[in-house]
Image (cartoon, rainbow, N blue to C red; front, side):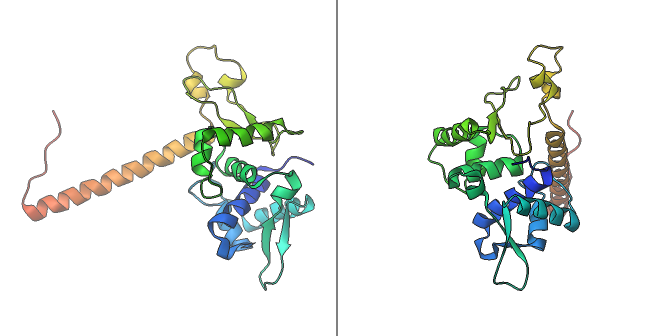
Length: 226
């Protein structure tokens, strides 16, 4: 079986996720699938795919028997066939889908993020299913070398082929001190910037609220800290 494109991987992950989180609307219509692909939360990276692009990805997945059209509805709906095609148990499908949607993660992060898809007893259970997928031929996941300063190693899926490793990981842990910067992916940087903007907006709203309350109580706002 060929490797998937990034958008095919996103479509597949969305179908698995929504099967568990919104079962009443699953299988998904094209509009729901598009919204899930472009969702701003719980996605790494955040994308802005078009309807035509998602349809192309769906067609590619249909050719691999990973997706097929549901019947019994006037609106065309799509469902995944991931467990059967990849010969994986439900727990492994949940982990793999979480990697497809959120990018590389530690076993602890995977246990947390996959909880709505499958509840794992503990982290060792997560690692057991990951080890099984890594031992398959071809392997479905891989444990990355631990990044400099990181406490745990992250796992990555291999459905889109070999992962693009940060320069510091690919070249070894020696270097000139720029390892931390090199180990941050473009997607992680974008997520950090988005979080920074959100916090700045939240701080501005809190300041406005404090000024309004202070005016109502006749309290002068404090001056700048010395």
